Length: 200
Image 1 (cartoon, helix red, strand yellow):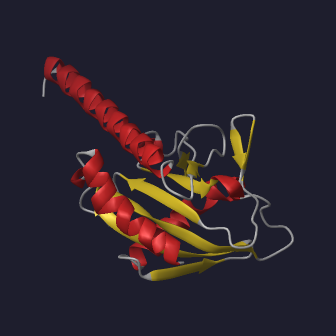
Image 2: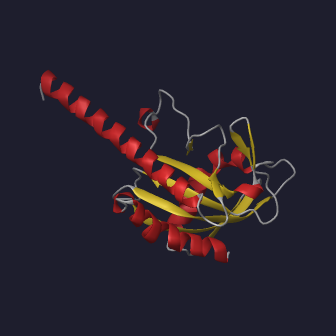
């Protein structure tokens, strides 16, 4: 491929990725808006402000991590968290239950971009040195949550435990591109997920 075509291909690739991230942002904000209308009043968790949570840092040894392929957000009942300085503080209290959303754009185990959404519950510390709030734990457990979801799809109960934290999962996995409207998000995604969330 000559230099002119390489420049054009690079430009198109960056434009596509920018558009993809923009559409995902819109999807997350649409879900956030719909959840605020529910009886529970679920708000988006803010570990470091209004942003997604990713499970890795970027270094020169791993340039394939520069563009995040997997990221998450969580939603918590408004009465189970505190907002201070643009961040939420969600203590690891009894009966804490979160609606958790993962976007996975590329992975060896998937053939197309996926969205996983469901309930994270039964969350508790397993040692005195554990996390005090979920926001601190969220970045470290993204991979573990995804693995549990992949091994237990379609609201099958999964669980995870290590020396700091334990939790259960009940998720559904869908193709990211199956949702083209607010009605799709509400009917195909949120209604079944919220029904399950409320039953746990």
